[in-house]
Image (cartoon, rainbow, N blue to C red; front, top):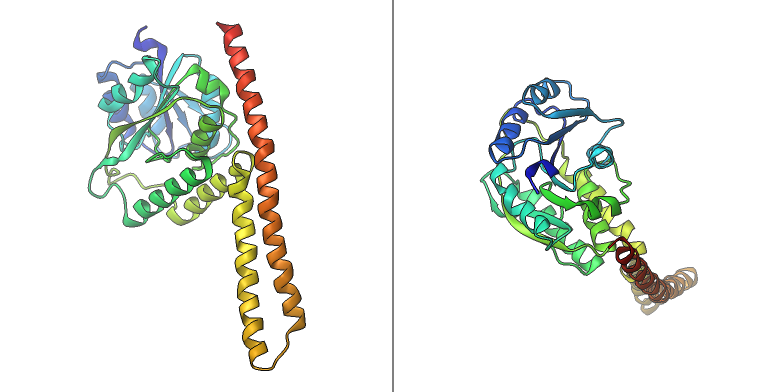
Length: 306
């Protein structure tokens, strides 16, 4: 195999300050097959990328997720490395990210940015948000990873074909990771260096808005993977609300005031909370059975393909 069978995928949006150097850096590492999927940039990103010899495709629709879905449909190579076009990833790390996939040790490799990052690469809010999201992911999916939001990744053809991506925005990184877990792909994390953004390149990520979207994606998709986590949170909220209302009712009762409607509400909230837990346990049994059946079907298909 040569590097011609590896596609370097660079999603871009207004990256004229960095895209030229990023392409040159990957070329210097021996990778000439570079696909730039551009989100209708208003600057000279596409022209610079084309001048550097990259294949440039203008995405349909908006959002990074939409761009990646479109790119995955276009790519025919057996191996794909996805990196950011803003110059925050080091091209020389491509060998560490791609290595386990080429060796057959992994279907999906993720570059862990949190091991070695340049000063100013993350704000304090970014770091806190990343840690919260990573912990939430571990609780929901039972796989403890250090950096599920990394944009530096490598895939083999098996992984690309298995993904069923629906998110169109920055939630796509978490969705790709969730899909990898759901499809029983072999996932490996490797340390990579993360650089501060170029002074002329403005970030498109809104920490609070996009962080909430990412957290919501992790939670909603857990419904079909870990129902106990999904319904357990709902049940827990019901019970907590019931206890709070019940505490107020008891305090009022000691003062000689009887709150009958609130007493009924307390009972209903607590009962509903326990029902959610029971529903979560039953759903978990169904999902576990479905997961085993899907694993068996995938194994049979792999044996047929072999």
